[in-house]
Image 1 (cartoon, rainbow, N blue to C red):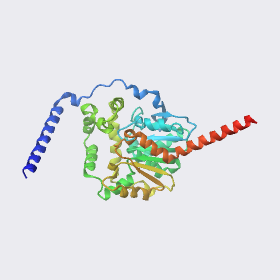
Image 2: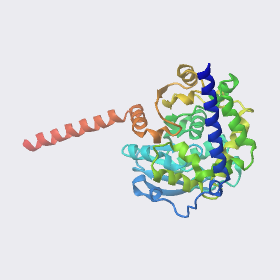
Image 3: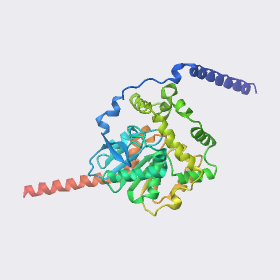
Image 4: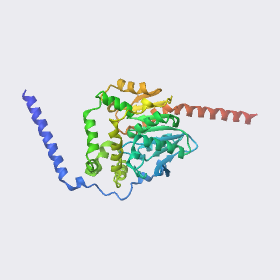
Length: 357
């Protein structure tokens, strides 16, 4: 009993000390005023990540980064919140040998122009914009890859515009229809709902808090192993005027509708598109992986699911080697390369035999 009491007192003391230290930090001016970042870090403009281009779609000047030849099939990457094209640098490099890889900055993110009206951020409007972008790039379809909120957009495109998708890979987040089912079951944690309500109703306070301690939220998002130049890339990008505000607006435009509408697959268009869903343990909202994947595979068929261990919200950055391997296997990249090598060997032998004759 004495040991239990001592343990409780010790824990209470540690909590008080931690709160006192945080209070001291809150009282420092530097905690509330982030560092000035007048110039972008070199990594944002490094040629190894691809070529920066602009295109106007729906009267919005969009920025994207490309790698690979435009004569190859299009592989289009959609980022989440708060995020931008740089999130996909490892995947663009990996798949540019076989695809024309394009990482988009959604309207108001990165270097893309913000929309004139916030309604542009509605899920259905963003989906239409992405489909128009595919057409503007001279393609009729693409391999669609999304993470987080980018996955939610991706699921909507799969449901409503299946002719624009040859295959798809979604990371971490299921469609809003599945999320709505989880909410109706009471499976979404109360902490998640309270955080969402805070973002929805707290005015500009979420933006103010996001800037504190020199944009420390990105240290948490990218994890302890993040490279300094990558942290600076995110902090510089979201230190730009209204950058965090656009992310907050995009969230609010869709979360308010979450409780009012029945979403996409209830009126989805028939399709038989092969898909891959990569997830981590926290993505299951308290469900067992089997239960959570069952919801997805019942609604989307054919769909492969793969668990990725020891990663966070940005799994494609935390463990790009594993994520790239899983995507490559799904797309049959290894088989394609083996067949190409076999064809080359056969051709070389034919040439060698003809020269001997």
